[in-house]
Length: 204
Length: 225
Image 1 (cartoon, rainbow over the protein chains, first blue to last red):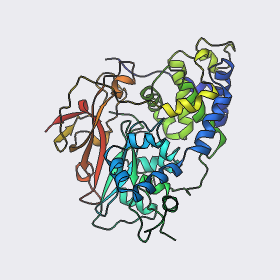
Image 2: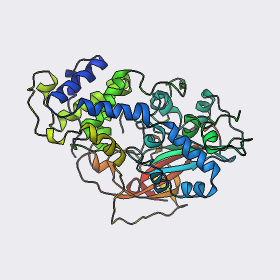
Image 3: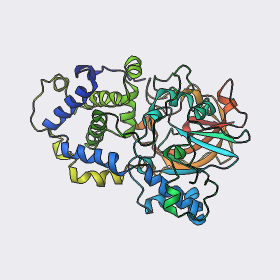
Image 4: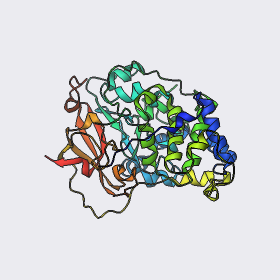
C-alpha cells in the first residue's frame, strides 16, 4: 500500500507568517503564476461584497413568502442560484429549518467548510479548535458561550459539513414582527443565527 | 487512525470565543493575502479541493497545532506547490529563477476573478453506482476511519463517527469521492447521504437524549445493519 508522507518544504520559507505569505506571493508573482491585481480583487470580493447580508436576505424572504420557503427547504441550490447566490463553497446548499422541536447548528470538524456565497468568509471562532472539537459533543455548552439557552423540549441537530454540501440554518421568525418588510426582517437576521450559534434579534 | 485535523469530540480546547458580528473579515492584512494567494494558485488547475485539504492535514501534528488558521493555508500551499512540481525547493529557498513559468499562461487575471469565483466547482457527478440505501434505513459506518487505498491518506469520515449506527436522513445525489480524488486516483463518484446519529451513539455522556449529529457520508463509508 502506498504511504503518504513527505517532507515539509514550507519550513524553507520565513517562519513569521506575514513574511511567509509575502515570500510565497513574491515567488509566484515573479514567475508569472499569480497576478497581484487578481489578489486584490479576491480580497475585495470577500472583504466588501459577499457576506452575511446575502444570507439574511434569503432568510427574510423565507419568513415572508411561504412558497419560497417551501422551495428553499425542498431544494435550495437552484432557488438560491436564481437569486445570484451561487459560487465557490456554495455549489450544493441545503437549508435546514429551526422549529420549536429542533434547533440546527453547523460545524466543520475536519476543516472549515462554510457557505461562502451566503455568509462570506467564516469568523475566527468557527475555524477555532475549540468550536470544531466541541460543537458535536457538547453543543448546548457551546451555545451557552454564545448566550443561547434552548428550551428543554428542543432537540439539537449538529450538522458536521464533511462533504461539499453547505448548510444554512433558517432561524425561527421572531415574534411581534407581523407586517415588517423583508428589508426590516433582514436587519433582524444575524450571521450567528444562520450558523445556529445565535438567534435573530428581537424586533425593536 | 486519522490525522491531527480530525478533532471532533476532543477534550481540552477551552471555551469558544465569539466575536462581534461586525469584526473585520480578515483580522490581519496577511490573512487576506494568504487566502487570495491560495485561491489564485489553485486557479492554475494543478490540484483539486481534496488535494488542497489533504495538504493542510499533512502538516505535522506539531505544526498543525501551533500554526494559526492562515499559517496552515500558506504553509500547506508551499508544500503543495513543491509536491505538484509547480515550484522547486530552490524556489522556496529564494534561489530560483525569475523567468516566466510554463504555467504562466494559466495565471488567473484580475478581470476573471468574479467569473471564476461565481462559477465555483460543483462536486456532483454522474455515477453508475446505484444508491444502496433508502431514507430512513439503518446503517453503520466503517471502523476504523481511514483511507482504504493510501495509508495515512485523505478521508472524510471523522474518527468520532467510526463504527457508529445511524439512519439515512437525506440522499444528496452522487458526488466525487475525496478518498480517491485527493490522491490523483480519479473522481470515483458515488452516492452521498446525510446520516443522523443519536448523540448517545457517539458520546459517553450526551447532553440530551434527543440530540443528534448529522454527517455527510459516502456510500462506501457505510454498511447495512
